[in-house]
Image (tube, rainbow, N blue to C red):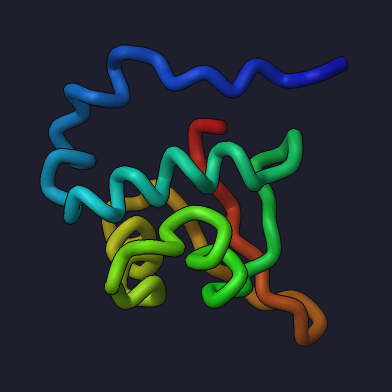
Length: 89
């Protein structure tokens, strides 16, 4: 069974998300697309940047940390593997 990954209108009026950099908001939408059905993906910043923001001059780690600071994602390490969990997935 596939998961519906459409972005609802509430995404665009979220007060917490409005505090984030516009590129962080775009990155979050991209993370929805990259994550598996549980909202998990490998925390590989260079690959994530290449897939989601290839033409933007930005610090992808800073944007990911900003999303974590506002509790949209968590960045964790398990058995030497780094993962991102996208919340409210």
